[in-house]
Length: 234
Ligand code: ATP
Image 1 (cartoon, helix red, strand yellow):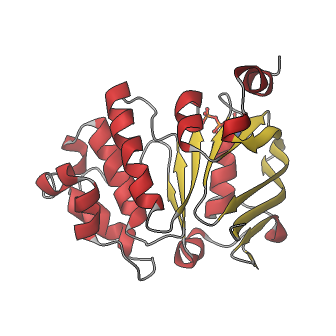
Image 2 (cartoon, protein in one colour; image 1 turned 90 degrees about the vertical axis):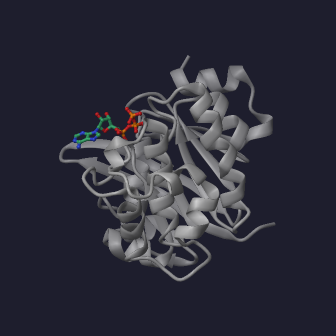
């Protein structure tokens, strides 16, 4: 049984008076790929933001490598080994591809990821290294966002809807690189609305519905019916 890397325990999250997460619990083991699925507004991004320190969380609700980290600021969370690929990529548009990647390395840890390794993973980025990031296609920008997160040498990579707005062939191309990331000893938590993609890549699946875990289990045990019930509440 692999070690538990991340434990989320009864996590609540609020935007002012509005409660977005209600007692959410989930685990990510060492080397595991966990897919978190759910409809619009289910709370997926909120969950990732809480883990990444971009949103308030109770201290003991997030335990990483045996240490309670809920409520720590984002830069401390990065330094401990958690990196977020945010929804919408959030690149610095006027900076070059390489400058964006280098920013990812500033707060992070020592480890195998470097510009060279990121360019090995996404060779097109080496060709575009000196171009402003906004001149790239959507798929290439997503590669920069993933590369920037890898530059911090995380143990856990959180990916928020990396397929959003991309063509199917581009999505396949990006997903095809994920095993190489896992092979470096990184665990992944992938938030997706694309259920097919999520089931293909995930060992374990959680479905959120209106801020609660409606379904949890091994990806191979999931059926269409189970997922539809948890996803749409039917
Ligand atoms: P999507 O796929 O649309 O991003 P999601 O599952 O990631 O959905 P969240 O973005 O986590 O969902 O949103 C969960 C709930 O919190 C939604 O009802 C949303 O309207 C609300 N919410 C999200 N961000 C804010 C905010 N900044 N202020 C107030 N409410 C918010």
